[in-house]
Image (cartoon, rainbow, N blue to C red; front, side):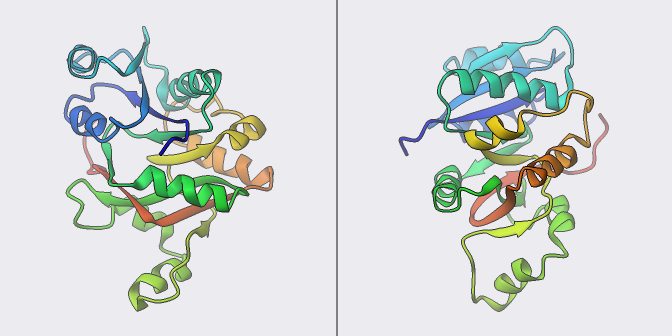
Length: 216
């Protein structure tokens, strides 16, 4: 795909996941914002992925502010869209290509999300299931194996993997810096809806996400 999509990953002590995450991003311009990791994350990225744009921070800025730095960099370098990806997630197959194709057909969607699977890719990821459980059309299509749509509208989806078109960022802006970690994606979805844009899940795009409960 020749579209100018930048992948943005915020890292903090991410050695457990970062190799698989970045290996899934090799076909795209990728920006990593490191929130002052205390493990070997930064040295590993410099050695194994020298093509990645690495923005090093002297403190932990949190999720939203760090993503804002990556978003600004991408927009200043001509991005048509950004794809926010958690450090503990990786992209499956043609996910970004499929998301961008749907964006082009449905430009009034301000956030497009793939389906989230668990790290092994064997089950629907827990939080994705939790946040989409009331969308009967989405689950009915898959259970009954009929009438699948290109995109399913939802009021919210967590920000483990978002395609955000440039138009959305120019209208809505970035994340509110008042939120350090958790809540910033709720706030952003509310602002997207306020600007009369929609939020959607694209059923032929997938990422895998390690969302198992762990100590911070």
